[in-house]
Length: 375
Ligand SMILES: NC(=O)C1=CN([C@@H]2O[C@H](COP(=O)(O)OP(=O)(O)OC[C@H]3O[C@@H](n4cnc5c(N)ncnc54)[C@H](OP(=O)(O)O)[C@@H]3O)[C@@H](O)[C@H]2O)C=CC1
Ligand SMILES: N[C@@H](CC=O)C(=O)O
Image 1 (cartoon, rainbow, N blue to C red):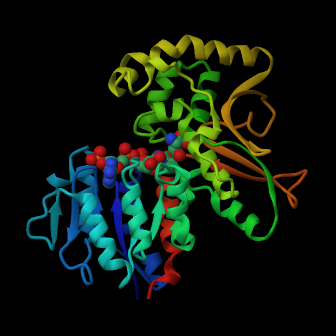
Image 2 (tube, rainbow, N blue to C red):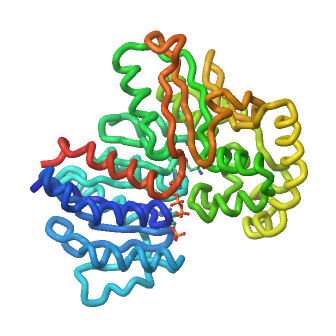
Image 3 (tube, rainbow, N blue to C red):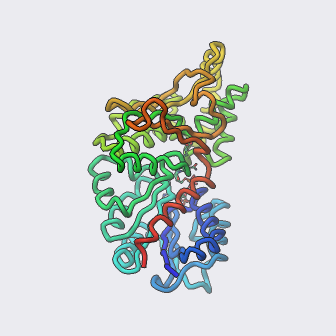
């Protein structure tokens, strides 16, 4: 049996669902000769780590207990670990780096980033340099400046990040395959926010903006702070990831971004609780008027990502109800890729573009994709 040790950074909605998937896929993986061994789990403050890295792993019972504690929004440090072969530490960053240094070159280790933090970048850079594999659902490490991006991607074959764009949809792999076959991509157009797709299609049927955003959060579609979605920054990160995959050496300041809320409601001036509690409702009228104005012309509003002619922009567009993007409902994403082979009729990828389940499934598939690198 091939053992693949996993260190999980971030145990929120996506991280917990990943642990669920790892447990429920044991039989399938075993038929393939694979065993995923979770050796450590971190949240923002603590790390739980097995006491014998080479030989032990968290049991499935213990993984379920971790999920139970984290789903009640408690800290990992409150997980009862007494009597179990593991230890708890409150310096997760240094420890994660030590762990990748000791396992990277020997048994191998997959470091999985399911946090929503930019602070994991240092861990990921060091892990890849030490010989570990890295999987990201978190877009932030991959959208820092171009120098950091180039450092992180020096060992491209040991990095997977399918879930950063379109959650579980095969967007990154499709673009990668087209590029590898020498088929030049000229244009990517898409609706790449599950949250904004859901919000726009629900407002069309008369629901208030604030109510719909809060519901999208409860469904696990939004970022931890939904302003990351509403500002367009989450889509801008996806656009930057795709543009860099096309070989463009650009930073975030090259992406033109339209925000759905004014600057005075931004994170530096209003905390998340106030924004969700009272700020959001102040936007109900203005957003619903924009949606109604589009509907009166037989159109709909969609938050569109457009990458072409060395330009990258994301924002609301009024589109025909019958267009591929206009027909989208709920949290579905659609991406159209135009290239030499897909010139007049683009390659289209469509399906659920947000949610913990599909995102975690994409992360798991990325981990399994590394199997040939493990002994
Ligand atoms: N949900 C979706 O549909 C999709 C999500 N993603 C991405 O997946 C990631 C996770 O999303 P989600 O699970 O909803 O987020 P959550 O907020 O539910 O969970 C984030 C987790 O990361 C932990 N964390 C924060 N900072 C650090 C750090 N420095 N080191 C280690 N862990 C840290 C948090 O700790 P604590 O519990 O202590 O706060 C928490 O456990 C995000 O980056 C998101 O963009 C990508 C595609 C789709
Ligand atoms: N918040 C994001 C989740 C996936 O990246 C979205 O709504 O698309």
